[in-house]
Image 1: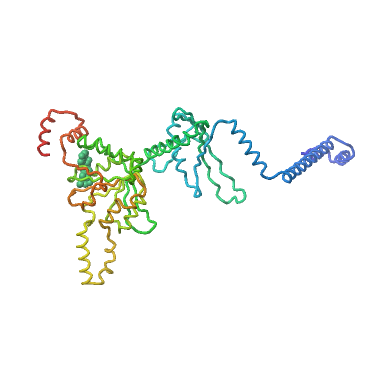
Image 2: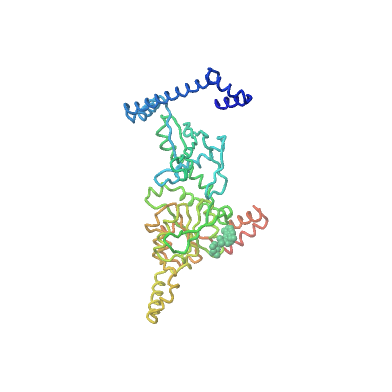
Length: 460
Ligand SMILES: Nc1ncnc2c1ncn2[C@@H]1O[C@H](COP(=O)(O)OP(=O)(O)OP(=O)(O)O)[C@@H](O)[C@H]1O
Ligand SMILES: [Mg+2]
């Protein structure tokens, strides 16, 4: 700025007077000179201030231990804790060494999504993988209150900005980190850290399950070590227990059994049994066995795993399947009587035939390399799959067999304990007929009902 003033004042004058003017600037103390001196004085002051700050910093490091700042911070917090009666718990989005998304964080997010939709002023839509509906969660830096057994609590959503990677700017920056902070009075510590957090986790998981898009899985033909065992599609079948035509008492019994199972975690833990249950659905073709599986899935919110036994190569592969099958699953084997040769006698006969063929033509097996890839699953392999040690991996799983010919099945396969509940689906009775009339025709009564009842009784 100083230079600009000088140049402007020089250029404003006629050329012959410039020399005279410059001379006067140097010889006399003008306003310009005063400005220059003041600026120099300011710089000198700044320099001495910086020097004294640096020497103070060096002295601090020399004469005080380096832990002092952290000590000061710790004791300040301690003192503050004595006066401040509230406790705060943080739940980070990513936890552990592998920085996996924390399950507790996800459960809290789902739990708060119901509270926030009525309370919080700022919400945001969250894209949840596999969710069938729009999920609204608390926006960053928003707060929500909750109440549990008369205790008031505060949840806050916090976001940490990504850290700047200063030394290596070409490295990708870390993502934003989110956390939930729970604040409550310290006299409720036991209830909150015990039953309340457990309640939040359970509720949150249940809400997430109810939002989840249900899926229908089919097992992939066994191949490489890393191949996924199941492939899936979205499953939206409208069949429910209301639309199934059967005796109301029987229907209620099945519904109660399923609900008791899905809420029976503690019960199974108490009696020391893996949390799984087998259902055998049998009856003539077209009586609603497959439809009932769908109704079961809609009632319990479990995914359906349709297991095609003929594509499972060996007992070993079958044994590994439970590891890759998560909980809340209905594993279905349809028409179990005709999916494989599952009886001991048939296997012996087959082996004998194989031996005879081998004797006649020793090179046959090599030539028929493709055929030898056919399923080698045996009855014992299937029995182990249902209730062997490996089947206990996971939990909250039901296994459903359907068959038209229950008498063809090996008694070991369907004994109680393996197939806990046997459900016979038979031809239409009068009660079932009434359900169909209501579903299809919106009729609760009709003059012909009186004559239909004895006719259905007669045909049984
Ligand atoms: N009890 C029932 N209530 C309502 N609908 C039924 C009932 N039984 C059969 N249906 C209807 O009949 C059709 C055939 O039913 P489904 O496929 O469930 O029979 P299924 O017992 O599995 O037959 P299959 O033994 O041949 O596999 C479906 O469209 C279903 O809606
Ligand atoms: Mg069927």
